[in-house]
Image (cartoon, rainbow, N blue to C red; front, side, top):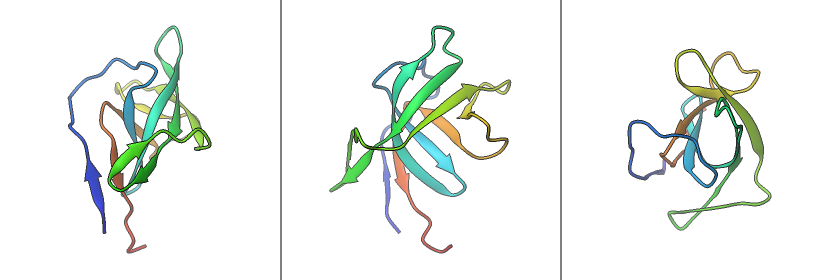
Length: 98
């Protein structure tokens, strides 16, 4: 099991280029914000690569649209549970026990 974490800060305003983490179940995927709507309620993220402990932008990485929910958290659009996006924090962890 490998876990890589960068510094965590409580609140971030979404901005293009900001690092983030996409949480799916117990797995954490590093992502970068690549688009922010004018209202800041919708963001687009792109999955990053992890190489030798570094997070690298991946222009071929999967992209997802996330929306700001009533609880103040971003989640992948269309997902009722899971798919949480944590702005300002890049983490990488894959639970290999599944």
